[in-house]
Image (cartoon, rainbow, N blue to C red; front, side, top):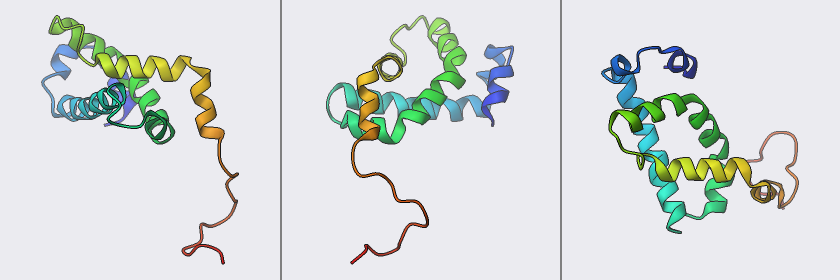
Length: 117
């Protein structure tokens, strides 16, 4: 299912009865687990940020309407709380962006199968 389909859904109650909804909830649950891990220092935030930032930002953009619907439907403001907080921090903290700019510059061209001598 593409993100554009979810964004065009008008009846979220009906959507919540579909297989697509359960697939999306599974992804959201994994993202919440990662966010809780970062919050509790079980997962290293720098590593998660470098590898997951784009996915986290895209996932929140694509599912924000659904997340809000789930929270209202279940009267549960804490649903996806850690994921929402992590997303906000990653969106608003310019200091984190430097994590992606440290280290050697990447070499252009094909990636060698063996390290150079």
